[in-house]
Length: 526
Image (cartoon, rainbow, N blue to C red; front, side, top):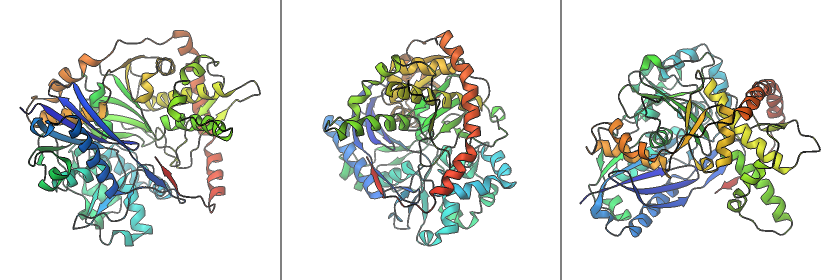
């Protein structure tokens, strides 16, 4: 009996393979740490062959956990980290390493394009602000500054597209990533006008066909089946971008409640559900994303901050480094257990933190490749616990900043991501937003969202709404109301947070100018 769907989620930090039964219950999971290199020029690159090998290894370990998995698998679905540029040649071989969403090399190119009158015309079609992390911006930069890299390129993929190609031999992308960079969200297809405005007409041949995984799938190739240990011919579904899949698995597709959905992962994704093209709100600053959802006339409109838990990793890394200098070897996971205590023991809102820790700056709700993190208001009375609390609050202020750019704050936000497991972190975020918080018991929302697309594709459910009723709703926890006194305090501080990030922009620019020409060593990120 084929009663299992495998969801693959190839994230920035971890590649996961998760087995679900047809009712959405998680059966087993396997994972492999991911890695990428940070380059001196602001680049962030990942090896395509290694990514495929790590995915194969992850799937093999899942097969070992469920020895009858080949017989039971009804479908495989794949999603992965968004944006970036993964080039292959006509033989299917990688053309150099992939450029990731973290890559900052196209920042100056983006700045020039955003200053052009043409950018508004592009934004009106894509409903997505241009940022250095996107494939369109990266191809613009490569074409202008390193055209030799494109000479042997035949197809431009995103991460999940590469894995789908290795699983099936098919070159394709999905409606979400295909449209927000190169297309028209209303038609769910490429737009020749957008491609022209980006100056990429000569690279149009690199864009693969757009395939909707809710309606189409391809068979698992014999070569991939032999590597993984699953049956050749098993349906393989190309999922939507990981953000959409995570929102889907976390409860965004709720037409009655119309909640917000925030992913507190390496990046911060803040989404609202839009149920018609006419309801998509285009802001004056031309920022944010609009992504097709795997349901007719349904979109996820979102603002995405480039760094969320990356800020937490950084502040915990400070403690780790200090302890290591004194001979104490502590892994970061052990320090995570102290976060709730540090937050509870610190005064709320005594320091403002700007959470722009990413080397690529920020992309939402404003675009500035020079944006950098910083503390405001430190005095001699503050200690490490105050820094930790301000980092969590800064992430919360960034979330509120993003929602404010999309209209009124939602009455309910469904929270997912590793940080959502902390009750103290949830309390801080709920108070900063001034809204109730609900979290899902779903441990792997991204893989689940991809598997949900497969469940519809193979006919297990007639619609994605039907699938969400079965896979998502029963796992949503009780609503947690915000502390009204703390919410009022944070509401006052939010204006100061926004004023600070606006006032710091010329400072960031001067610091960026000073950094030019300074070399850095290449760092491998686990």
